[in-house]
Length: 362
Image (cartoon, rainbow, N blue to C red; front, top):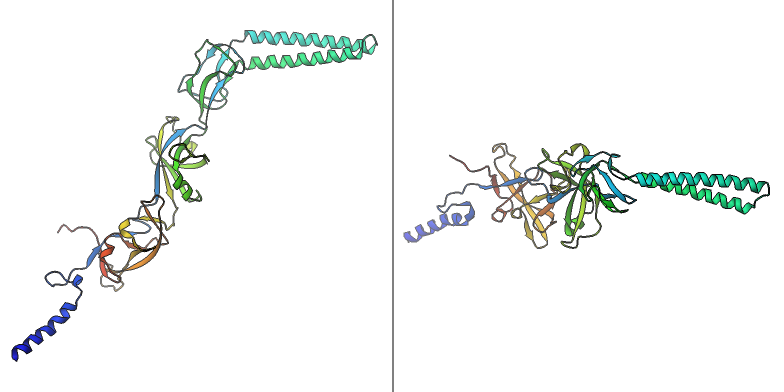
């Protein structure tokens, strides 16, 4: 009987111990230390949503200059890779034949004017018909048109730079005979330097407005990032890759002298400006429950004794999206919210934890 009473007392003492949560005890039965969790801050520690593209420097325009008349090329002063100012003469044709054509047209006009004066005098004295005077007037006008054409042809024997340009290539050797419209030199318009990138269709259509996107350029020619201004985009997709070509402009004050079309440049697109609550979270910080998503939020203890060294965790529903299928974008969070970055499957609503501050060397 005494043995049975002692066994009942032992069971009554052991029952409360078995009722304790096994996660709060070590294998030896001692209370387990508080679990340490890694925290990230919505407005600080989380990486900003951005995409990186390979870009190429391009000129505002690239044109092939040619003469409107034919002849022998006698002057060609344009070296490849040289910058030329607007209005500077680049090439010229032999002018002797065109100058003679102008002299001939001037003489024909003078002759036509004399014939017109004589015909009008005869018509006024009834010695000639009015029709002859009208024909003389028409001949004088045709001679005037021929003179203008001869002068225009003489002016077309000189080729000048239409803008501040970079000579890309010489397309015709000097002292050769050229025909009207034959390309002579290729020029890059460097009055505005541009950068072109190819944007995938999925990303291009997922962003309704470009106002919330900031673009920056990176290159060894610049000390840091350079802001880019969106200029235009090609409304037709490329035949390979189903992507759109988007063009940006470099600030004129930031353009170095060494930059040339065709150079590579990295373009970074950052979505959202200051105060935007969108952020990218690691997949380990988000738990999916059916069609809904939630994160675990850390709230520091407000008892004055722990000095913020402990706190409680709780679930918070969030809205998520993904622009590329690999990054989880969370919106609707306050920038100061502390979120558990990993190990949320080991925690429960209301658990008391401490922030992970790194490994101790003691």
